Length: 462
Image (cartoon, rainbow, N blue to C red; front, side, top):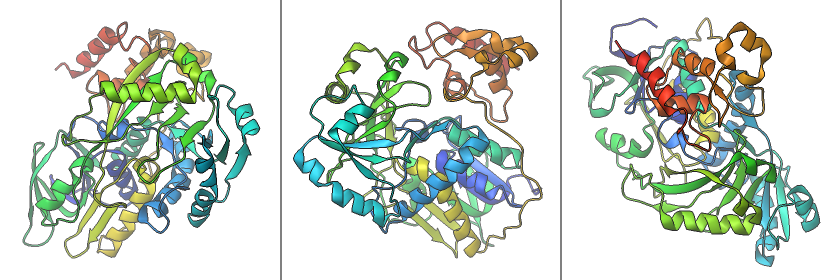
């Protein structure tokens, strides 16, 4: 993987979950790789702010590339997550019908699932549903069970992909926003970025909300990203015992509705809203959006009213005028555009990477398998497996793993120091939060933020 500085076989623009997955996939081969990210961290934009579901793809539009890749991605990520240390729980989903009309749509939903290759759905009676979810609001008629739907950590997933790529030799350039692209006379591309120039034979556009802008820099104009904002509410961990499964709404022609789901951190998540916005950086929460979610929460599970809200947040989905992913390989140019990846991108990420790798090979990228693969495992930040503060043997080896700094989330000093020594360390408190859960709890960092700031500052000091 050696070569001239700034010259690469493949440069991937965008270190979200999709770009990082592509970098990981290509790092399995003898290639000079660069992963370019405009922000200061991996997975810090769209990828961090979604409903954190691992979809089976049962409800995707049959015959679309999205349907194909979500189904394959579910298979790949289900196998990869336990090996890489990504928190993932297959809790199953219940698609609840509240009206006669919604229940009447069940056969069509099952038929679509079968067309997508998913055949493990079954209908539950109201009695069976309430036995599963005793705190469900009154009036539900029936439900469809989707047993293979799951919940996953949106923070660890892109970090795991990028970490494996970096350990295999991929160069990660943070703070490298692409401002211009020129085609080289002998083939390939010359990129002007805020992190320095980059020359590459093949270019992959995984720039998320800005993928259409980069696509136009290269002379293409087939889609436009119109951000769709989704607001969500996170309930305190004391609400966690209320629900063990994902509750889905029966979809309509315009929306999949609001869901209620557990998280791998022990909270309950309610949302999202869906609102088209013009500003690609507008992740603000709104009074109207949160009021709508609270009203929906009262209907779905009245007991939620007795529980505190830990946090609210909003994410932006890279929606386009098309109903499918906008993945195109321009073979003569050596350019792959991976645009229009919406909320299912987390589930489909590894399959998208596999698909892009196959297409690049068809475009002339030589793929010689690497001799060795990195041996790594991400630190667990989920509740399904023991955390450091619960491990006496680990604490005996290093007492810092017994010194709790964030009491809301039981994060220890040992975890914070380990994160700072990782192949891709955090550069600020937000980055530390995504790696350890510090500042994610009820007090939102009121108690521990100062110590986190000091630790991160010490590392950044010359």
